Image 1 (cartoon, rainbow, N blue to C red):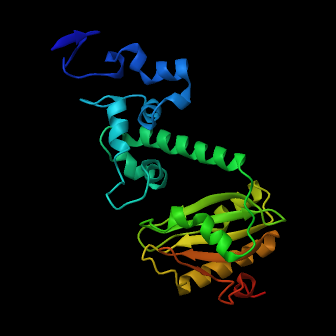
Image 2 (cartoon, helix red, strand yellow; image 1 turned 135 degrees about the horizontal axis):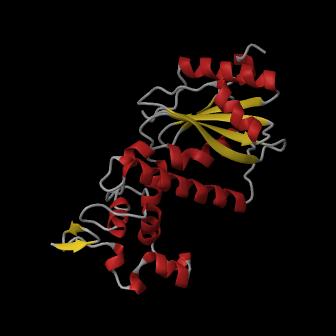
Image 3 (cartoon, one colour; image 1 turned 60 degrees about the vertical axis):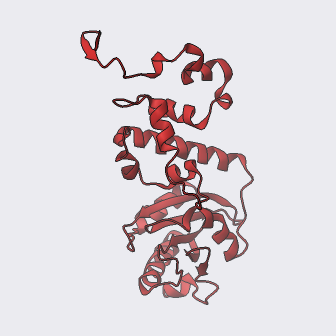
Length: 250
């Protein structure tokens, strides 16, 4: 054991500061640019600190090993982006503060990517389904999202409105249309997943669609469709002859 600034520290406990300057992620980023760093190094800078017996870099490497099996095509970053913050917070060396930083950093990256690419146009239900299929087909609980569209049906953004538990998801019109109004959306497409893999709409899905379409009609924001995502399958209310406006009693 050795004393460091008035307290004892295990001689075998390493920190990033114990690395040579040329191997420290922060110094490498400043000297070489962010593109030169590995995913683990970048993630360690988001974490800032490690835990007892592990550096921030080692915790980052552990995180990047999660969510990947021999037959699982999900990338490590995709897993971190889709996992709830509470789930990440339970992992060794993370906690709620670091989990929040990870989620915030990944969300900023996603928004930057969306802002630099040409906005996709939704011409038919399949376009909407394919836009979210990869990120939603394997989710283990219901996620309710909304595609925000301009007058030409170009996608202004995709917002998550609620995350349910198992097979239940609570959605309030206030939260959904607050997002649409903030982005000046002229129309929306509702999207949620069925963790069972079967995209067949339930009676609750029908009731919710009618309630949200009715609220949208009052606000002048049309609910064009409701897409239910299953395991590489989808169900479109509009394709099934279930116009959201008719469910609202129009």
